[in-house]
Length: 444
Image 1 (cartoon, rainbow, N blue to C red):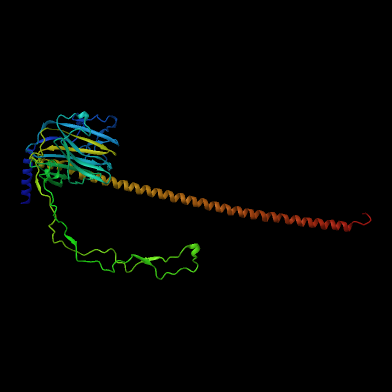
Image 2 (image 1 turned 45 degrees about the horizontal axis):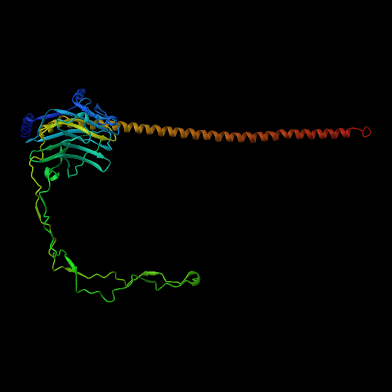
């Protein structure tokens, strides 16, 4: 039963997909995309270049190729026209594309803009008129939002809601659905994150009601819920000073009035101080409630059941500023079918996200092991160096000891050498003495 239901749903999906109108699709499968996309020259040397790449981690090296911002602190402008301009009158409009902030973006845009067919692609810049701007924008920790901006009667209207974007390194899918009943839906990675009514969530039109300029609050209107009790009187013994001289303080014995001045005891909090007296509050018998300014129909309000509609949709492009480059855009789709967009996402985004996550995890694991190996190697080298230094110190100590021993030995030998000299001198003295004794005095 479950299998039959799945087959039925698959058949319905195929039928719906066949009926879908695809206005534009770009998968950047080969370098022929350069024939369809035109880079703006408006910023001159401040314009950054896009490169064709799948990045550092991906599911398929060829299928996952997109266009990547490649230079830091640059403006980027590139666009492609549709084969045929169209109007979304009476139809659903779906804008879908992939964004991969591989560089861990700190500040920069990642949104697309929908233009009319007359746009000058070579001159696209920040002030170029557009119909819709949609996608992520990040700048520091404070700005991480999904822009949804519609142009209406020459004004760019920002959504009143805060839609959080993704800010990691992986590929994410952004989908905007605008319906002919003036409702919308924003999806990220295929899941709804916001939806509602165009008129309620953007200031397309002035308010339906305004405050009646003729109405004024009556002068005798009393909107105070509570009033002072007129019968409540302040007690006669209420007023006490907040601070009083310390009654336990005594003048120091060594205090000299002439030198130190007249002694005054220090001040302390008065235990009898009761604070400022206020009368009790009672219900105001004349209270009429909060006065509400009456409203009237706004004469400037005019309903518009075609807020969603654009008569000339003819191009799509990226007009961005990025501090740190590295964002990859891919799998861009403009269609009138939500079902086709979902099917397209399954064939592209779903496969990409699974494969690139696996590859990124493998890269991270490899880097972790290399880092640990490098740290281990560094520790071993440090330990070896320390051991060598210790060996050198030991050798120096041993040499010092040997030197001391040699010196001591030399001194002892010197002393030993001196001893025979003394004995010889003694013998010589004895010989001289014997000679003197043997020599006759008269010979002297």
